[in-house]
Image (tube, rainbow, N blue to C red; front, side, top):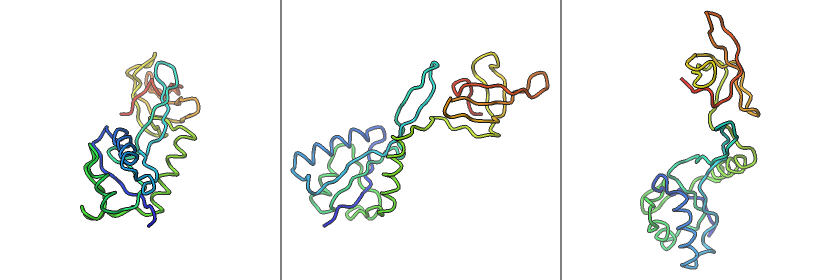
Length: 177
């Protein structure tokens, strides 16, 4: 029997805990040959806080853990009886359906890309309205003209004395409206 990818529904916020518990239980019951990878799909995000670049993780699918396994009664029970697991997603309660190989590869590729090149936590687009919350233009509203993700800076057109004035601001100095 070949291993397939299944999606396990876990309590939100406990995905990493469920992943560790599953790895421990697989080892405890000696089922390493029936299980492959167990992972929480995340990507690295970068945000500017207090003038410093900080990296953190963001989950693609909060509340879900991906498990590569051979589906059988014993493996199904091992996963289902893990603390903080609510069950499998897809198929029926007794016979869950695996996700397609293409879906699994897309998720794994996205996880790999997320660790290679971190993405910004907040995404801004030209033409979007923002409110300046810090600096000399605090409490002004403006429209994003350009976005520079490498430097975490925005070119914002702010209305000052009835005239649109371009101002360069950091991501942390603005918030979306």
